[in-house]
Length: 81
Image (cartoon, rainbow, N blue to C red; front, side):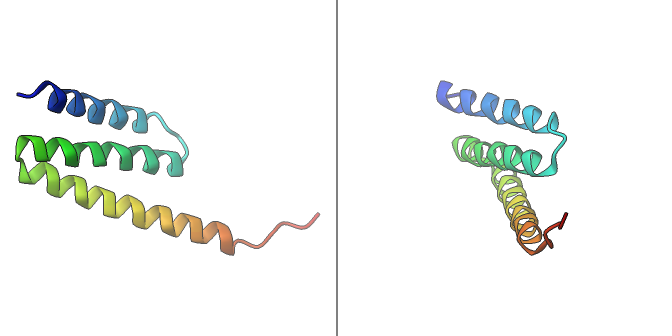
C-alpha cells in the first residue's frame, strides 16, 4: 500500500479518537466530520466503496446537525438581567 494512503488512514483514526474525547457536541461533530473526510480520501486510495459511502454519509449527518445547532443558537432568545 502507498505510504501516503496509510498515513491518511492513521490521521483518520487519530481524529476519530480525538473526536470521541470531546464532551461538547459541536466540537465532537466538527472533529468527526474531519475524520470522516479523511476516511473518504483513504477510501479512494484503497478503492473501497464502503469506506467512501460511510464517510460521505457521516459528513452529511454531521453537517446537517451542525447546521441545526447553529440555527438554534441564532434563534435562542437572549437572557435579560
